[in-house]
Image 1: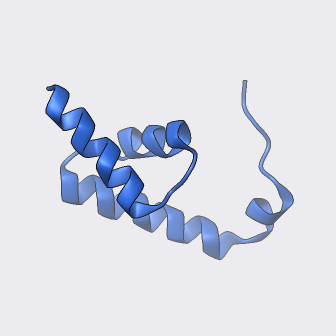
Image 2: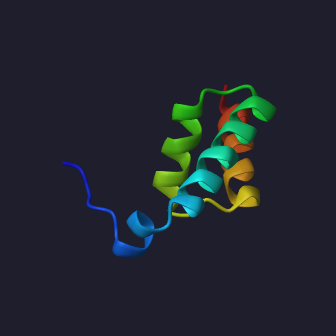
Length: 63
């Protein structure tokens, strides 16, 4: 089931571009796929860099 974007997300392509740049940066820096970064962002509910990096590190520690 796909969720609908809110009006503010759909109306602001600049914010969407920043999130995509952030996903690309984090995936390259931590050597994980962009899909993993997007899944972490979806699961934790924020695209804040420090929170996403903490979750990536927790996942790396499990491997």
